[in-house]
Length: 423
Length: 193
Ligand SMILES: Cc1cc2nc3c(=O)[nH]c(=O)nc-3n(C[C@H](O)[C@H](O)[C@H](O)COP(=O)(O)OP(=O)(O)OC[C@H]3O[C@@H](n4cnc5c(N)ncnc54)[C@H](O)[C@@H]3O)c2cc1C
Image 1 (cartoon, chains in turn orange, brown):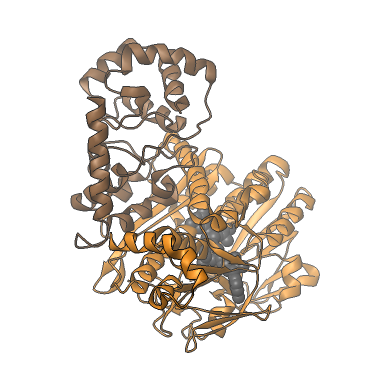
Image 2: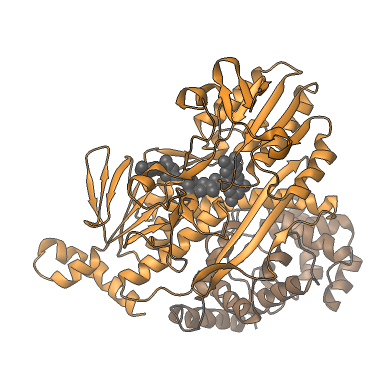
């Protein structure tokens, strides 16, 4: 209530302050609390929007190089030809509507001591609180997989140009070709993602190139929703999809982009299409800014998502260590709201309240067949905690009717998360 | 009657608005309710095509639904798993949040001819409890006006299959309706602006 009155007062007095800037120094100070958000993906966009929704007196600047963002979620359906690139595109107009100052630039450094952010465009942005949400960068666990190799052996693990390259390769491939997905080691963005991708590509192959095969070469011995995916491989993609665990010779150690060959030790897999998803770390800027631990991810305090390394800097989304939450879009959205509420509280001189989070991840695994995993999270003994008894997986025995409903709810999730984050 | 209900909802809404910050121990109402938005839209205004709007839903309907999901007495794809993450008190807190939101009627794709035919069935069989085109957050009735059509259809399918219990009065009416009439009336609800 007090907050509301103050805000109203500021709106009313805004004009007067502009004319006589000496008039109300204390109020001017309060009105110009500044938040800089680094990265306009799911996490950053959500945080920016929810800060403005909770307290429109806070000045929020979001810095993001791209004027259009392509969601990774549902990009696997672009690979299968089920949807277009346009359908996974979002713009920043919605955020501008919430009064977020959107700047298209790349952050080159964060000076946590001086509380400012520097950009490639040569600008400096001062902040009271900074929210860092740069997503992921790729680590070099696979010899020969460099920037050049990415052009011909796409990862398609950041949606956009990479998704288009992979889709075009699938379209150009002859019937009877082999598609390989090199799945990454933990932890990585979207744990069920490589396996949903296998299902989506397999649907395309069955329809258009039925003599083709898809092999998943995995750096792991087990993976997310494994039982349900194995069921889907059998139910919908038998004879097409084969999963090879690390133990059974799945761990890709080297690639040769010139010949489109993946190597597991000395064993060569020369394939028609190679989708190589390397190991990951927090986005490069988080590393540059000294926000990462020795494993390359950003440790945070679960109540506020404030970095445990640098004060006044919050890290959300894939870049943060938010275990037991997975690195997912839903988690990034949920974390964005927790950080937003904490930042609003802190800038208004209040202690942040208890966080509440949810994760829900759908995978469309076959025609009229989707599966999901969900969990509710809170803070227990100062740590993020999966609420006991909550969540879990779609039942292996769920009926075709319920699986078909999950497809509808997957698409509902997609529509709503886009709007909730950027709209 | 209708007016009273509306006033009550408005009152609950304003009490809630004044009490958002840290009245209760634990997470605030908005903190918890915001976690629903990934599937049900910001403030419970769903972008569809199937997840229902929660905005403006009555507290009792929200509470009953979540508790039924939790106990497994209402068919679900995922809500059974999610509802188990909350105490009854937390559910009530979220119910207060959504009841405090204005009713949201989405622009739902529907069959206009069916919707027109459905209006008659509505008047005859549904209007008594689902007042004002199903837009009034009555005690035990969900918001049906401007509600996403696949969700309305799934709900009715569950009722008809006996997987979800109908209130006695509803069962009596539904029994008299043909599949075509039900289809039409669901389109009518979806069409309400
Ligand atoms: C194939 C695939 C399928 C997926 N499916 C799902 C799904 O079904 N459900 C789900 O919940 N999740 C899914 N995900 C995961 C989801 O996409 C990520 O978890 C989510 O995008 C993480 O959000 P983020 O904000 O941390 O990072 P991002 O969304 O990647 O955003 C990071 C942003 O930061 C910007 N940035 C980076 N560096 C800088 C800098 N120096 N300066 C300024 N800006 C910078 C980038 O341009 C980018 O826009 C999927 C992922 C993949 C790859």
